Length: 193
Image (tube, rainbow, N blue to C red; front, side, top):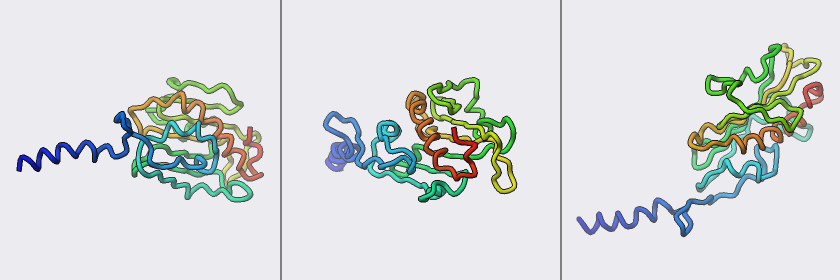
């Protein structure tokens, strides 16, 4: 019995770290997606969010991107590694005047605690685990029965709570938001910065 326990103790570290390199650090056993939810293809911008693991999964089923761009204004895309969410991108219209960022704000996303990204005409705010970009529609656009006063894009990385991704999110939010805005149907042209 003691021999079996010792054998199990000796093989357990090797089994637990099958994805490790010789120095004991873990690595990715999967290829990064060619694009981030069909929006951008600069892997340097999104690679930092992909942890070591064996399998990546992208659910972009609610992002309706066709040959003519998006078919609607809202959408979401979630990415996971080994069945654990790593990123969620959500897009939603602003249907009330001066509701900028309001649709996605929670008590964890206090606008006063955010850093502003200033290298773009898009208004963007960044926290350690999330970023929100906003653009106004001037004049407002119609979306069925609603007026659309703006569009918000959220990138949520809160699933990796032990990491501070504020610098990475500051580099990622505006290219992702601009890519989405560029795919909007013509009826939302007043919303594209």
